[in-house]
Length: 465
Image (cartoon, rainbow, N blue to C red; front, side, top):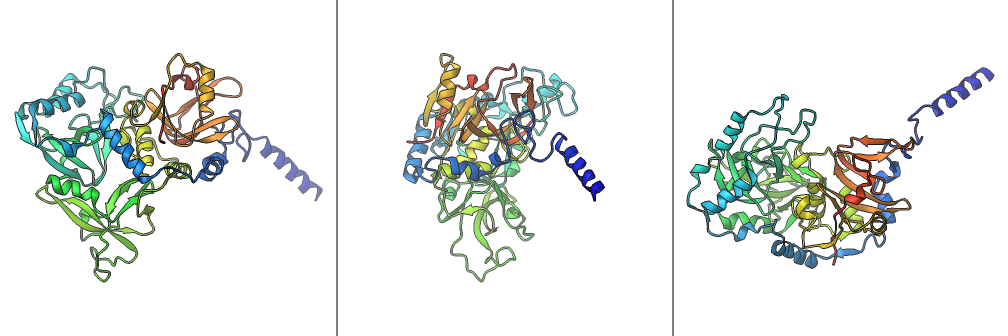
């Protein structure tokens, strides 16, 4: 017994001395290897308990509608494509395409690590088919029928700024989701790509991802009622061989889909009884490219609601945490999203619209903006951030973070990020390659040269009265 006791004691001492033993804090001051973050910080419940007036309504439905209208009226990065003129001029179309598809001037590398040759760039420029833009054309509308990438040029070719960073495809712009109305402005030389204009973005999309319909039909669909709102990170319709166009369709957080409430309960939907699912209506592309609609089943177990969620601080935290750990996807690549897409889709689950890119979100006049300049010293910034509200959006050049709460050390944020830099206990600067939706404290974060990151903040956007 004494020998057994001695062996057990030795084992306990050995484990306790091992780096990374459960519960042991590293020299980052945490048990996770990320400064200031322990397991408790990675649950929404921790932050909802800390949030003041967590369940109070921040904006009601009427106030959100008013703010969305203000966004359309005051933000130059947002357009209302329903109000486009009945015809488009060549000057307008060429301006849209030129703003997106300017000839690259910097050095680019392909997926094999080879520098992109000028001849290949010539091919991409020729594919724009600009000489075929008519002097005027009727404004045509369509609807996105599956999640699809928006590209700088009409090509799937991936290009990179350097050979050691192949996560960020410089031709990846954004993604559009099923049910999104677009205006068709132009077609590529091979006819396989369309240049489309949506309310928030204009770029090239594969033709097979959209279906053309009349203006009336395209804009009636998003207004149909009753409807469901996707409140999970993503959901999928039921697989069905009878109607592959609406089989296993992925719908992202904030998607609004009509419910076919009058569907006869005894009638099968694509070969399946509907009593375990919602019968929803989805768009699809017919063989001739026209816009059609079909019933589809969305299981009742999926994370959906009958309306947009109430905009409360607790719900902001819960919605953000539904993406926790998702891989970072520049321009919504990797079937994921980037920093601005992340905060946009969280807020859209409440019905709140944001511009697409950080550069536009950070300066939008539609919200309650707190602007910072170089005249605002470090101490003032710390004081301001210690008073930040849950849901506040914090902007540095090229990145946005969302405040989830305050603890004694200061504000914490959730953000979709490639990584963070911070100072270890010994004083060395460490770069943590997070590459996903992450929770971090804000004040310890550093720029690459070791300066506090908060000194780069130029804007705080507050979604409130």
